[in-house]
Image (cartoon, rainbow, N blue to C red; front, side, top):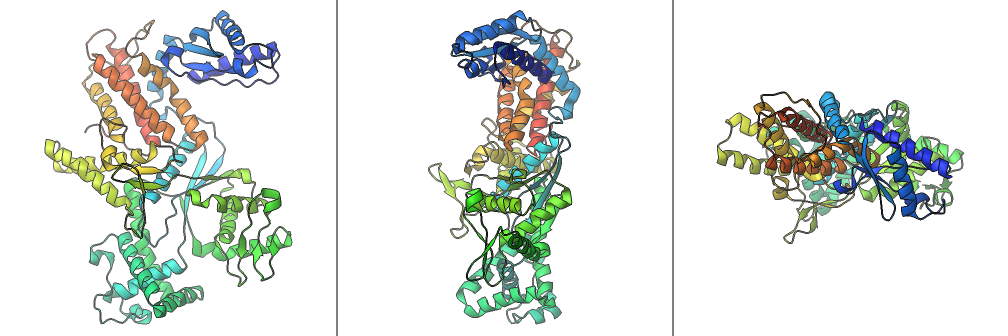
Length: 596
């Protein structure tokens, strides 16, 4: 209903501007800065005043008069304001009827078909299977899954995928670390052929009482230490890479075992978050295919051969990008080489219209180079490819500033560890208050911890560096997921207590204390659209904080269950607010609870 009204107003203003002499005018209606200025505002008077040889405010007054004279039922007032804005006030009946549309749509409220027919592929997270996932991976995962949900909500056909870089020197270090340091008896030889025949003489994660990914991380760290300290070990690890390449069965067997531990650990963490991929690409399956794309580029004369035999891109003249090596002079491929093969594979597998990479900002140049080369080779247009970057994740230092995580400094925080710490904080409150039985306390603590962590990561613009603060994440009065969740729970509690139906029997001619809350719910569709356009769900998170604040402010002033003739109307507002909060949290990947 709201979108239809806005479209009608845009058409009326467009026709008026055309009659005034503006060819192909662009009319945009924006959310008004405050309730005093109505619900929407347009700056077309300032945009076209010079073209029409008029002062902006003068033109704004003429447009306001035109709309007023049209006597549009959906508007209660139109006013011109300096320096040239035209403010549009929606009639009370429009805002109240919008509540009814929310109640009618329920779980589907906010969905649209703007991207229907489009196929998108979103690559995100892609953890290296040699370490447990830390908070940087968490931000990647939450940003990526938020984009997936936004696009699906807009009617797109979406596939989420990831790449496991599951070969090379890093994995060989895990393999050696396992072979050398996970023996049950120090007298057992560090020998791969012996391991093949005596696997039970090595620990498993279960036997060590360790999470599989933490087990793998320890193998990697120990293997890395040995590799650095001992040249013989370094040679042995490098030989493992060579043996893997040539298909040595013992090495392949060990490779499969340690990677299974890694994959199990990654899956556990993602399952805990309620996130997953539709498809996983394994580097070992496609990394060799990239060389044929280099041959194609040489044939098309878009690549160049250097004097030492290495193959280089040719991007400076057409793309204003620095060049990068595609093949080393020994014929070794690089990441961009195999990424060419994978990008083409994705395009052909999904017949995708848009491909998105959710990867840190340090890969910006590499991705620009990849997209340009893909265009040179006819894999796709650069406009089909999008890099979604995100800021770094750090910890709050003693002064409240940003402290970057570092593996060497031992300041890397694992996803499961931070969820566990938040969960312990929430569980402590339940135990102190003696609320719920044991199983309910455990289930609620887990759900609320996930909600608190997700919201804490998603409430900020994805491009901003983020300092994670556990205390802030569980603050029930601050800008937190707990605050939004408490607000939702309050709506459900009121609805359970309410004896009457949540129905608007009569529409008030003027809104009272509920005005700001009802007004805010007009904007949900636009917030979803803006988040989709920006490929960032932080707009949704900030909007949920706004709705929560307005709801709690209204609740503090209003007696909702008063048995009066307006009780049904007030319950309708409560129910609509609950739907908005629930649907918004669903975009963030947060499951709601009905009680706390």
